[in-house]
Image 1 (cartoon, rainbow, N blue to C red):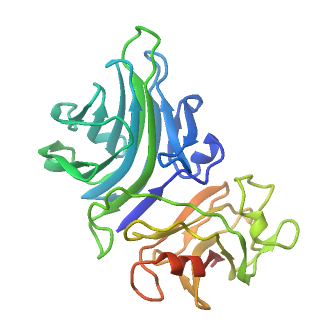
Image 2 (image 1 turned 45 degrees about the horizontal axis):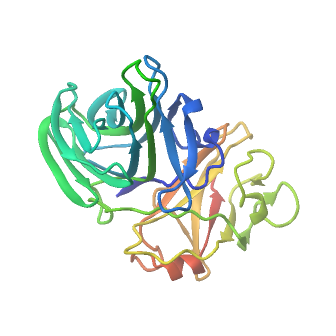
Image 3 (image 1 turned 135 degrees about the vertical axis):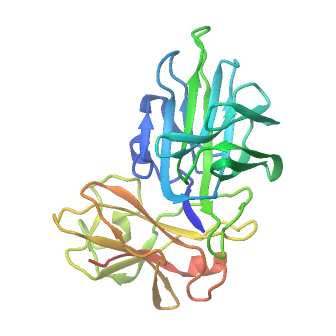
Length: 341
């Protein structure tokens, strides 16, 4: 089952990244740059000065064992005293780490910080996938660009994995050098369910913003009459927004045509950036409106908090057909949100 996906495309500034990331450290060294395909965006981390804390972006998700994670990673290291790392976490405890430090090499570390394996690695936009089963012993299978490079058995903590962090760090005071790493097209799955329960391969995440109003117009724009115009630009928080003063109320939108898909569409994710100012218990659901029928996301509604946060709702299959999505079905559909409570 797909738990989380992030392509970074809908963020305008680094402060927006915190809407879905659980923690950012050294935000002055984090930026958004052009994505690996020449469009969209990627998350760029630059190491700080020696002895400073590493630059970190942390994401949490539903605790899982095994957990499967994929992401594109591009690194630029003028020295082996610099590194980029992907850490698999249970709370604050590291279970397994993938590190690119020496040019052309990935290093793998267990929960006791012992080196347990290495593999060749191209630093330019390689797609890394890890299937981790925590335990003593546990297992870790790593793919680079679809090719298995290690299948490890070792001490990989206990319990389950509920977080992943990306970091860039400097280990020496010499030379004033910095490590630069770009992350893009992140997915997280577990092994439950009939869909997305194993490696997905080199995933490409495409984002789109509303282009026109759909059939559901129950929410109220804070200005003007075009609903989509309040939610189709860069996040500007309380400047442009839609409001639902009661429940149930729905709003759906039409979107620009997607580019042609290369392979199977693994899922469609609806993300609502939302907050409540009612002082009560408010909940939100995502809607896929297909051929005149509204379908709610399978994961159920979510609480809306008093500060803006990103609420993700995942449709792994087209709910009207029970089959994987096609580009034509997505292009013809409307997607939006429903205040349920």
